[in-house]
Length: 156
Image (cartoon, rainbow, N blue to C red):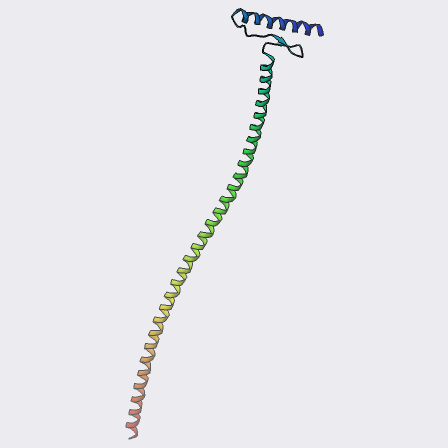
């Protein structure tokens, strides 16, 4: 209903005018009551109102930029977390390869020691067999000499 809107607007204008008169009565004489293009009551001067609107627009723009920056930071954090996980995986892989190489080196050292021990054992067995062979050859020569002496004694 248009008449009720007009009455409400008049009542609002009256209230603003009454409040302005109270400010003036209290010594606030800097108040300038005006009407804008839309016939709305303005207590603030037009240039200050425009500055306020400009500041509001700048604040909204700044807020949007901060929101966009936050989104960018979130995306960057996600990317960095992913890269961090990849780095950790490769680090663990490298540690595993290093441990494997160290274990391989240790296994080679043990195998070398085992082979050296086997060689020493075979060397000792060879020396024992060579000594046994020389003892048996000496015993064989002595027995041949003895057999020949005995053969010569029987023949003669």
